[in-house]
Length: 82
Image 1 (cartoon, rainbow, N blue to C red):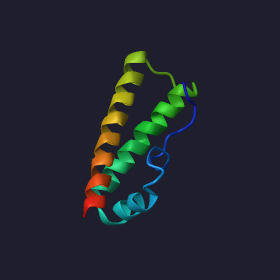
Image 2: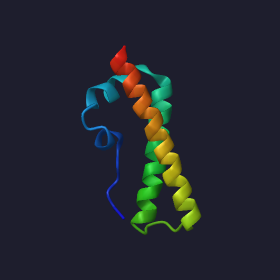
Image 3: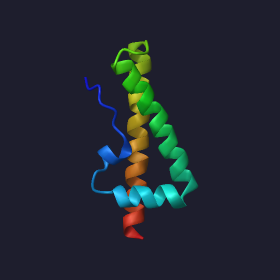
Image 4: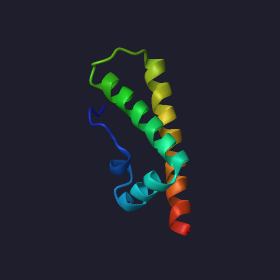
């Protein structure tokens, strides 16, 4: 179990410029990014034992985070292809 928050730049270390460009130009990406940040922050607080949550809640949040990461990866791929 890691107590380190995983921001998008840590998840996609070679795509920082693309992440920045998407955040500046794509409202949908900003919405997805903000949602990822909120979920990731909640997971971090649970793992650091600053916030209580059931195992089911924790697993659901992690599944949501993975779905968002898949969506971000697709957006990065699309931006690279453009």
